[in-house]
Amino acid sequence: IAVLIIELFQQLMPVFWKCFIYDDIDVTTAVLPFASQLTITLGKQIKMNSNAFSFPAIDHFPQLMSIMYKQMQYPEDFGYDYTDEDDAEEEVLRSKLRKLSQKIVKILPTESLQFLCGALANVTMPLSAARTSELE
Image 1 (cartoon, helix red, strand yellow):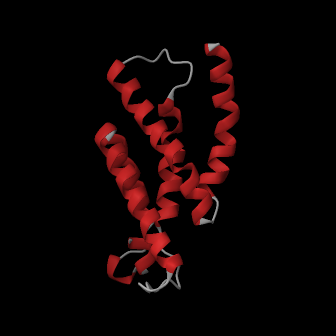
Image 2: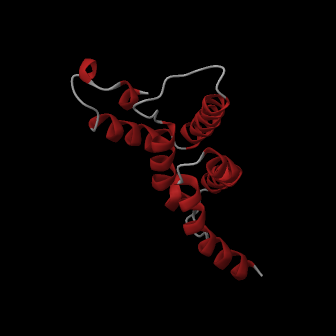
């Protein structure tokens, strides 16, 4: 049964990535619990300090962080309107992504810092000339 579960997870991951990066709040929000569970699994595997996992969650860390980074960026034309339900939903999603990001930083601080440095390396320099959406 364990082998079957691992196979199902491996089949599920491409679908999960497509949903997680999809440009629709409802779709991304629907798969956010799976991203959270993947993060919990990652933490447990790191605590066990073993490389003998059939489904090593660490292998998915770079893609998870990249998609979260993309999903947290504001569109160029974004202007928050507290009366707009869609804007409120976007803020709720970003809040959930920030919380997930914080969990990942606690689990993988060095790797998270490396990711952040890589992301900052792609920001327009000097920072005062960067677009707001790049910095947020």
